[in-house]
Structures are given as C-alpha cells and as structure tokens.
Length: 138
Image 1 (tube, rainbow, N blue to C red):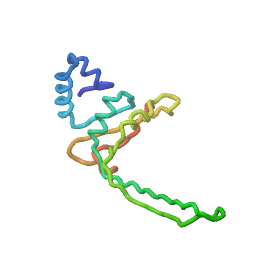
Image 2 (cartoon, rainbow, N blue to C red):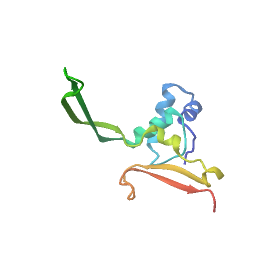
Image 3 (cartoon, one colour):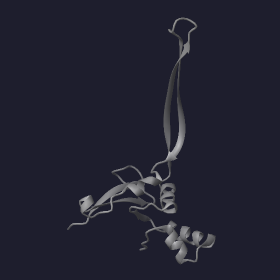
Image 4 (cartoon, rainbow, N blue to C red):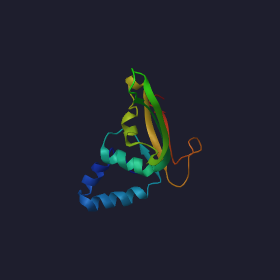
C-alpha cells in the first residue's frame, strides 16, 4: 500500500527531476486500485483525469440572425444555422478533485473520493472509476 497527498510529494522524495517522475509513473502503474481524495494540486488532478481517460462528447450549437432591412425598421430575411461538433474530453475533469468533500462537521462527517481500478469497470458506474462517500462516524 502507498499513501500520498500529491504526486509532487513523491517526486521530491525520490530526488525530483525527470527520473523521479518516471519512477513514480512506473510505481503507480503497478497499483491496481487508486483512491483519490480532495486535491487542488495540478499535477495530481491532471494525472487522475488522464488515468480515467477521455470520452466522445457532442456539442450542439445554433445561431439565428436577421438581416437589416433597408425599410422602416422591419427585420429582413432570417438566417438560421445549427451544427454538432464531436470532441474527445476528459471523462473526469481535473477540477472534480477540488470539489470533493473533506469531512468534518461542515460536511456532515462525509469524505468523498474517486476510486479507480485497472482492468474492470465498476458495475454501478460502468466505468473504471466511481465516486464514493465515506462516513467519518462509526
């Protein structure tokens, strides 16, 4: 078992630099279950998002415009356009880690986490990650 608050903490423990990052990457690749709690560290949140992967998203756009008429203030012909754009976006945005509850009375003693596992989807989410809540009270 390995516990850390952020990836840069582990990088620093291994001497920092590119070699430390490669060693941490190799180490983390062997951890089949990863538990992510609240964090705002960009390296850690981005790494988690990349780990969860990207999914195909569709963005719909539309516009409606009227031409000015040369007459007395009535609009001229209308132009309407619409489209759909297909993009790949993070399935789990990096900012999601900064939104997780951290427990204590202000959060009704609830701690949120994101579990990630290698090799199998969670039945409840259909993905290899799932958002869970732990109670700090027995």
